Length: 284
Image (tube, rainbow, N blue to C red):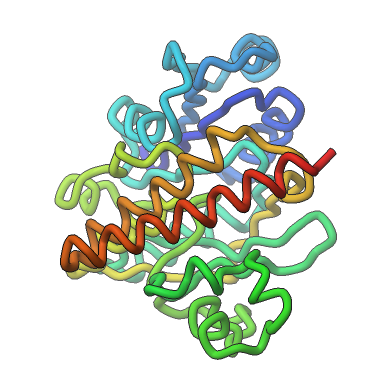
């Protein structure tokens, strides 16, 4: 089996079929299997996939267990030489799968390869970044300080703004929206850290791969459309809190410090979470 695609869903009925149909168009004769791992959707996602895409295998988690656990289960139950972890709001172009696989086979020390992501308007996303540092929670992509001062050195360094993302290169980490992972690297390093519920598991996984001597590469010849439409609408409070708890776990795991420093970082991160909850409550 060349490729196993693991698509994790949660109330994804509105767009998952577009994702699955794009995979069928892009398979180009590849020996490929698709596993849809459903985190207890309440909108009939699993039944919709069974009815409209019977060639995809549906695995039900029985509850909303988070992204990392669902990816790991799909990976365990798949057989491909490579595993593509793909968000259901992604649409792969016809050259995406062959392009990613060709890169991996030509670069045997690459553990993870990520495509060029673009939104519905054609704008290239800032996937492929440096590892977060102590100030990243203040200067990340969506932070107020980055929006007010987009040219500041901390945001520019973290987001790799001096690179136009039209050329391939090794990066620290790639967005988990679409990650092609070498199974032999997973066998060596392990799957995603299931401590993370949603967000941060992608940067952590890339960090673990690089710590083990593997490379993480950005492949712009492979293009995937990613529909980011939720940033302006209200999201679950649990998602906001779990995202920030994930930040705390990441820093404790990869940047261990004096307990007093770790406690201060945790307080600052949770203060940011409270601010995000307040902003979220004002959204329609």
